[in-house]
Length: 268
Image (cartoon, rainbow, N blue to C red; front, side, top):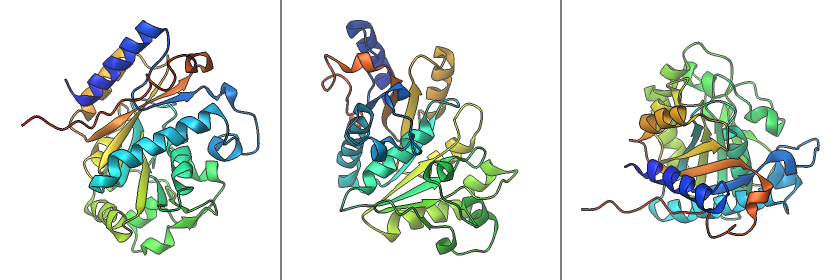
């Protein structure tokens, strides 16, 4: 059984045992708790004291603990299907990381099919990732300052017809290597398309240090989840984020049962 299968199995056991929707990496409450504001999706900024923001901080702490010692600083965020909350997780995790004094954060929108990160952050740029991969332009031309902490973003760029080929190209591999090694204190958070409809994330997954897998409570069918797990079983899974959990499930076993370390040492 793969690590991600173990994670999902334990989440299911918790759900049955405690009547909650326990997850294995972080337990992000439902957006029903979010007050509607101009920046309603950037909950780590607009509502830093909310349960939602607190869970992103917990996720940040666990990510740093599991990756820092081994210099695992390029992290891909994906899901099985659309509307699981992967992009919201990516942007809020990046925002939370950017508030750390010791880290610079680069958020990369590699969802070239349906980019949203630039909209969440309210930024625009002449060029983006797709332009860098198809044109002779410098990396500095696609790096955009957000004005929020130590956060930079590479937006998706112009629409292209061959995203999977671009994300698996030599130029993309070289870019990931450069982003990883240019600044030793940098975390690179990469948002990608969902796994089942497209091959983009699988291609990119082999280039990054680790993957966070997003699962939305009560939405995805079991068979679809099993198919997605099979596709990513050979990738380096850092953990699972069980997203959009109901607020009432945050009571009782809140801290104890929502966190597991799945980065276990392999047996010799």
